[in-house]
Amino acid sequence: MKVALGGTFDPVHDGHRALFERAFELGDVTVGLTTDDLAPKTRTENRYIRPYEQRKRDLAAELEGPAERHGREFEIRPLAEPTGIATEPQFDALVVSPETETGGRRINEIRRERGLEPLDIEVVDHVIADDGEIISSTRIVRGEIDEHGNVTPEREGRQPDSIS
Image (cartoon, rainbow, N blue to C red; front, side, top):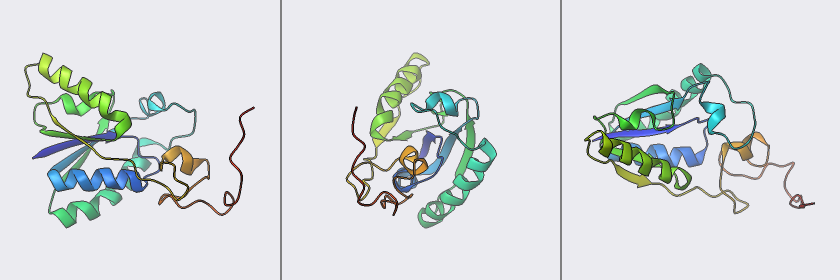
């Protein structure tokens, strides 16, 4: 089975690792990595995102372990548009997180319009941090948690920011 997966992956965290693990359980994996132009457009917050080549290098290192464990191949390709590579005919499945499931359904609409079979959409639940919230790259960049969802020492014992 050929599996597609896409994202910015900056920084990679345990939520991403859950996506990778599921993808490699299913088959050989092609990861669409957002380009430097697309990456900021996919963010709801305005924050620095490392350059494509740096993210690609780190992503490749992350993918080696699960690929080897499952005896699978992987490829990383530039993702220049949100529906990207998954609209190509060779794929059988798409691995998504809950917030990208709608995008997966849109990809299947595009595939149907092009006369292609829809993808099996595999939704992988969020990974929860120690504080009960989801692990996200934004929270890591803000210094709230580390890549494994551990609350960072400077945030421990701190009251949540109040809404004014």
